[in-house]
Image (cartoon, rainbow, N blue to C red; front, side, top):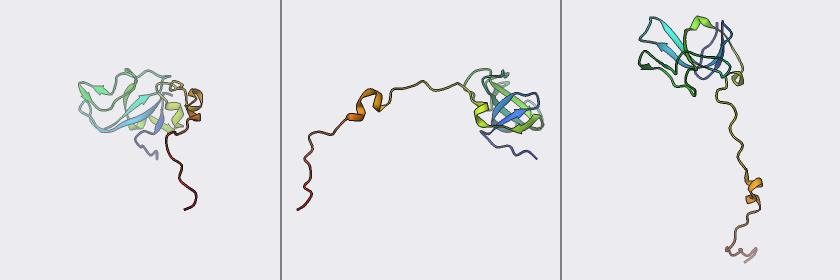
Length: 113
């Protein structure tokens, strides 16, 4: 039996991959539904809002989907469900020269008294 947990990444029976963002009852249909934020490689149907009710949030519009739990085939590695790509490179302390920073204006304490 497949264990479903929030923010875990799963593959659907049609091959789409997404991160679990919602689990529970919904207003638009009977039964328990799961909301997934699909990875960048796949297209969803909404942004986590269905018929005016917000169930979950997604990073990019159109990456959300609601399915019955039976449509989930297996759990997959979380990096397969990534959304939004890599963060931009920012200069670090070594690049900016701040690694050579030294505190000034402070008297050194004596080693012995």
